[in-house]
Length: 285
Image (cartoon, helix red, strand yellow):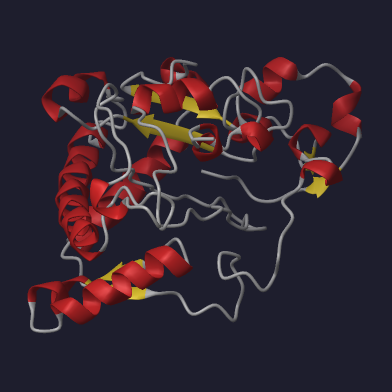
């Protein structure tokens, strides 16, 4: 969740506002801050070196790869799998249409998320923690205790599996939060399992570097808050994973060591944003 964009100023940085920053950008907004503090501005030397012609950079001329999930079950399956593989290799992302998730489930999740962020800070702060493995975690930036420059966003992260165990830890306000969020989690889990199956068939999910990662960035709306609901499909914290053996041969040697999700969380929780390239840290020399 990101409040509206702000003009830049130096005034708010004249005082030590570390505690205020750590309470989140919505808390700043609610307390009358209408200028962007330096705390949220990356030095020029740390900003991404953007190639405007690279397909991973969002621009008005980019044709977003679209995967019609319904056609995966039909006679055009091979063609759709090839399109899926191409999108993963050339773009690093794609849009899925006809995925079968009821629109009411999506609307309910967006609505209840907005109502959560609309609650008083004291209610939201009950779930604030630096523990990245917590079943529910409210916070700001990326790592609000270590980042020298903050990201202009607040977040609520929920672990969704196993659902019966984590559900009682989720926010109980708004009163329908758990019910609606659980419905959304179940629907997206089913979709991810089917998408993963298709990716495995088209190339192999652990691609040994063939599938690309995209730099995720969004534009803040200048007039109203922006709310995104991202669902990450992963493995248990201690499950070891590595490149698919089917993709390793003499011409394509193994490029990455085995790892688990717990190691990933530990890595990103201990580094500044510009140093959080976990994939590079797992490369074999």
